[in-house]
Amino acid sequence: MAADVTLDCDAGRRLGCNTFCCRLIVRLREDEREPSDACKNCVDKDLRDGFCVHLDRETHRCGIWSRRPAVCRAYDCNRDPLLAIVLRDGFTSLVALVTSEPPPADVPPARIPYVAAET
Image 1 (tube, one colour):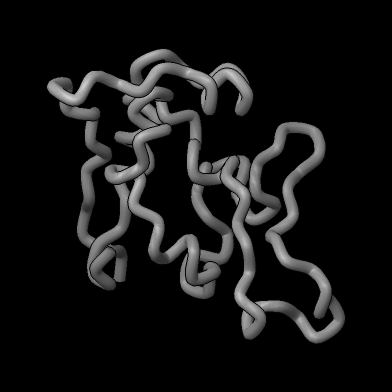
Image 2: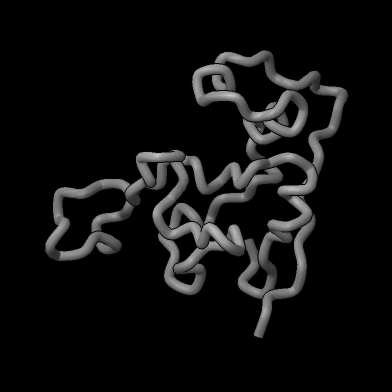
């Protein structure tokens, strides 16, 4: 993803992604781990709903956007085949999602638009 664009998360949620990327497991690189958490490999999830602990519940935006992990910087929901299933069928559970039939090859997935980054 280019440095001068961000996902239009509002448009994505209107399409039905339900803050999809904030539910994914985010593995930290060794240099991204806090010294006190040297053995910790992943970003924490809120045990109540499975969302990333850095998700701002009021705005549904990343609370650490400027210093988010590399895997979050590289993630492109428009290239994630699981998101196409979420947009087609709705997200019910991770088990249901990963065991769903993939979308037909001739049906293009819904795309989450990009917008210029805020300055």
